[in-house]
Image (cartoon, rainbow, N blue to C red; front, side, top):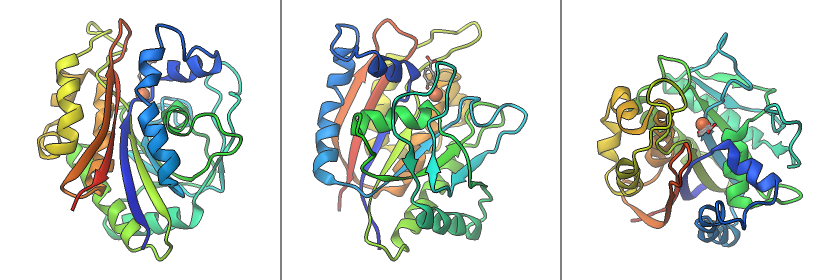
Length: 280
Ligand code: DHB
Ligand code: FE
């Protein structure tokens, strides 16, 4: 049986990648943000996971609005960082945990999920940025990845309850896998933000702070909320937070909240993270 050694929830804002590319991590604007990730990076160095399951949404880079799967899973050997318009970023390709990915796809279909299965696909900032936040800028990524795409872009997006159920299947897949890999699960997106419409620029600091504790200690509240509740509390793009539920549902009912961080400067996005370990 493989082992879930930790669950992480984190924002995946593209400007974080740009800040890294331009060496801005020590500037007054960015330092408070990046400092908040040091404890998680340190934990990661010590925990030495073999596999990272990353739950994220594509932002019109690998899937455009003409074809949007509700759920997709990668089974590729290699995933390239997609060029989002500024040219190829100077980060390594990502190596896939191919056999485990197929096992997960099998389990999903058995449990009546019917994902799009991707043998060849690029990954955008939704995956790139969380990997950089956790592992820095290595020559080669220290983990293989299992990418899971969730549609949070074009309605109808899946319900929070459905994301939760997918997390339960993920747990089942990890527990039934004969290998002894150490697995971390990264749920990404959020926190509160809205990039469009009359509420563009909306941030809800109070709801974000409640989320960071609640996702650890009271996930039922968030599992039972509607998609409309998410949009109202967190903004139209803040509804990306439903993807953290996939991670949370794969963890034990009780978890220890080891680290948390929140930073909402005068920007478009509430940004933050939690690091969870299973409790007995
Ligand atoms: C932005 C984009 C994202 O995908 C996100 O999750 C948060 C912010 C942005 O373009 O600012
Ligand atoms: Fe996003």
